[in-house]
Image (cartoon, rainbow, N blue to C red):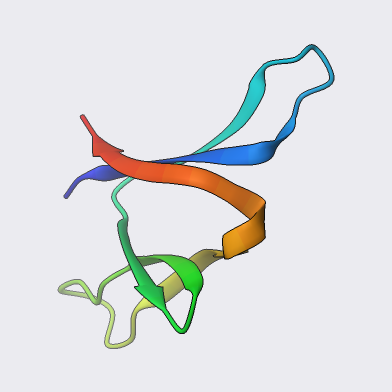
Length: 65
């Protein structure tokens, strides 16, 4: 499964964009909210919610290896 990297609007104080990374995750946008989650696996029956970001909180997100 892919990893998700989210670039946030809030800087880290040094002028650099803050980055959140989530391993073995998926992303989707529902009702204007970016949702980062892990889908159900062989041992789990429900998806695991890892984070949610409002539109105003992030610049963009992408999958990476």
